[in-house]
Length: 235
Image (tube, rainbow, N blue to C red):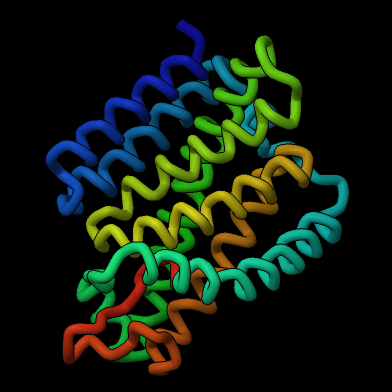
């Protein structure tokens, strides 16, 4: 079994466990990301996969990557209210995001929360859903479909996977995050499968969202009543 097939199988089993029973288990959610990250690190160490195959090519110049990530960030911030509006029309129950109350308590906890979001969301989530899932599925489908259609299908499948691991925030939040993950996938494809660009964009997006939430600027900042924070992808 190749590294890609093994990693894809491991991810599929993890997502099935999350969706079927453990969507609110922090140990399963975070543990799954870490296990797949360690599996990937082992693959890199023994030469079963290369950084380039995951989208982590060495850059002769970081400026184009940073520029692309920042420009795409603007697009995602503009689309975020649209994603929320669509999800709100389809799902009445607001997100359940009391988990994020802690980042409202102090600047230190906000900074710590942003650091965790970069590690788990920006790095590990993108490694799993774009570097592994999207790339592996696109490479498999290219044998039967033309390039753009194969890439588009892979983008959607990876986005659904990302939505599944956010089901603990509620169905509305998962739908919002799935939409935003489609945009992350599109960035990955349009940047030439450049995972660095997506990592930067995701991390910056979460940073903006966390700061807005902590400052009470988010639609879901008020956790005292029924309405709750959108979460990691309003964040």
